[in-house]
Length: 298
Image 1 (spheres, helix red, strand yellow):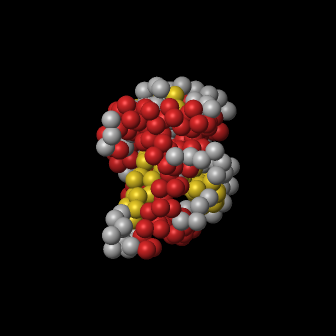
Image 2 (cartoon, rainbow, N blue to C red):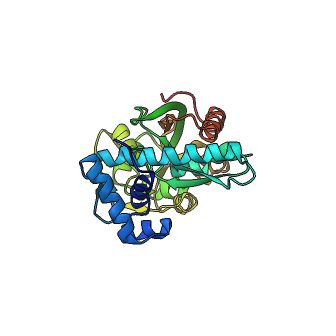
Image 3 (cartoon, rainbow, N blue to C red):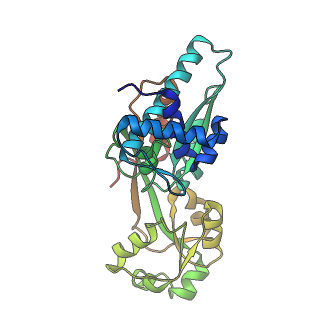
């Protein structure tokens, strides 16, 4: 079976943009043309490739073809850069990265990025970013799962260490001080989470209390605001040690259970593809992680 590049591009655009109409605008064709190309590709493959929902989502077979479309586009762009470097334009690398990595160690990997290479960074929780790889929406991702997605390589990066911290006034008012019983009293104390995908606080509570409590929860989907809300005494939260270091040193925050932390092992998963720009980014990510993350995941 020979695959039509225009049909593959239409499928990829529908998945990336979420609707046939948005895909048509990105391809500068009519929605009818996009629909016809996708239907023709489905007829050729003998199965449904995209679920007509909002947003549109690929089926398992569609994921494979969306990834193929992206790989073909990347290789074509790399070839053009090699033979016509002055007129090949920019090469875009779509990458999924969790918010805490984006706000701490990941930017160090981008220093000195080659001219002509631009990034499309998608913020996604490390426990869910592998899904964007499976869908073919990104070509690389920082993930918490070391099991390689089909068609990808997985590289261990190290671990991000999280500490349970709070403002001193919160500890005094809601936890009765920092004695040995503070861990148990955490079960009923308000906490701060990044969003509903953020399971770090719940995981820490299970580990230190042996229970699955449901305390009041503030949702704050911004790294800077998250830290500010914890400093303001609204609740406690799990904060990367590198982000909490200065506040702990100044006394603006205190560690709730000294000696207890969560280490989240991180992995870099990327398409198994001989593409120089992707290989360069991978090496940059590995170097930054080796400098700024904790070894291993214990």
